Length: 98
Image 1 (tube, rainbow, N blue to C red):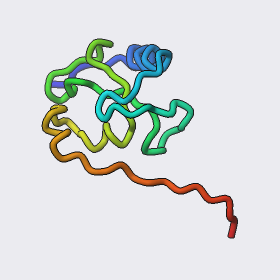
Image 2: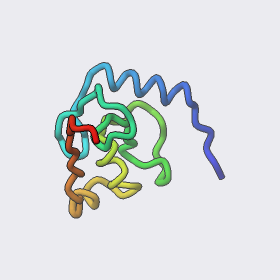
Image 3: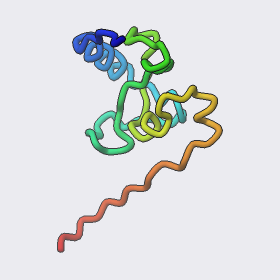
């Protein structure tokens, strides 16, 4: 059984959360909202209770997170994820062109 998900609702939730610029609800660090996908530290909307475990797209079930934190969590609950979270990737910026 699949649940119909509204793209318009997901976009509205994303805009609503991005307007207030909260920190990542998983790691607690600030999110740089100017970073674009696929940067691992960019902003994504995380479902507090995963859709696969019965969560919904309601704003009460959505929170800001880093793309990296969200992907590393998968569909585990937050307490389980916090027990074995891998360190975030390092990104280096260089101006040298080869």
